[in-house]
Image 1: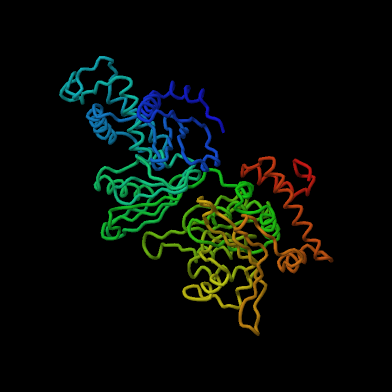
Image 2: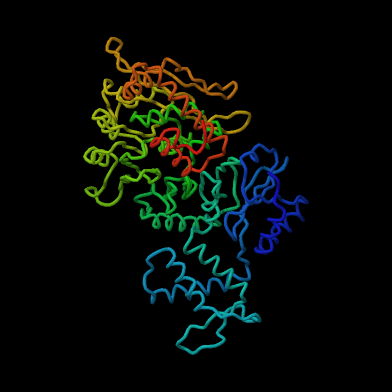
Length: 549
């Protein structure tokens, strides 16, 4: 993708701090950065990177590396100069003094409006300010003096006050950047990230002292409604944008000092066509999942941490029939279900013991509400038994689970603390396994294999399974081993569809494969658009498609 030189010039005219940054960078490195309004995944293949991209005025990101300089992440924003800091502190103190007389804010927008009004009430514009230390220039003994600032200084004060008080402070650029997957902070070292395009790298975001980090972590925990303390040093929660956060507060638990990790939440879910385009899953594998979900099969999406199993499960949700009643139970709010009838519930793990609600309780409530599909964010404990009870009573269940193979999955479900009888395991229809792999130095997510649960064999005392899809590491391809040999397609789905010739189901699989391939070739990647096409196909068949197949 060619650099947008005109776009860079326009951005620098509008944002003088960007102009100053680029000029200083070119002076030091003699290599002007390329400006890209959108970052392409192919940029991650380059050995050296020198890219600036916008994340919403006045914030920009610069990713840079050379043969001798490791890749790093720099947020470019209006700077707080040392000369301005004394005035900034005085203005903020006046804001706090005045805030006690204002009505409580009812929303973030109202909070921001109140803050800016208080800053205006505490300052006075003068382009010839000589009283930089904020001495009293006017006013009487009963009125706080206004602080004289230039228009440029006022703009900077408002920006940094909003950043620190309303937004996420030093983390704001990282939370706003749509290309970041994970944010990690261990002590007051530089914060590190995992970038969707450029992988893992350090950033320029850093807490200057342990005290500053300590205050930030406590404030962050209070903002999510789960205050961290020495008595409660580990906190899990959800940020306002839906990102998952884990905080470790006490320094006797986190030896290097308070730490946190954030799993970013995508405003728009990743679509199944995106995953096909990236070869995370093949179109045929996705078509198989489509048939399974359309016909009410229960599937567990399994893999290690950060393997992408939750993302894949979310991308597959449009395959559930559009008129289904869907029930979700999660520890941290993450799923985005595109169905109109959606009961969305979350656990509550704080407060008095009698007021807490765990996943086990949510699943028991789900059985009373008689949904068409139950989705569990992740099964870890005794709620797994309820999930299998739900399957036994005819409620399809989707969930993620930490396991690397079907054998390990069965071992974990039939052992403490879940203890599902092995004879119940065949209520699960499909086990889907995904992993993060390194191929030619790049980190990739791939569907490793898909197993069908055939049934319990009493003679052998175990569960029979059948692998129908398998990833070939040699050429990075996905092999279909289940042609004319799929238990779920032939004995479950074909039977539900009333096919006298069960092999007809493979035609349904081929049709859905072709629809997905056509969407990828036409670059239909928006989650909403993929959902709409899937829904229209479910309602009208091929006549509901916006393209021929």
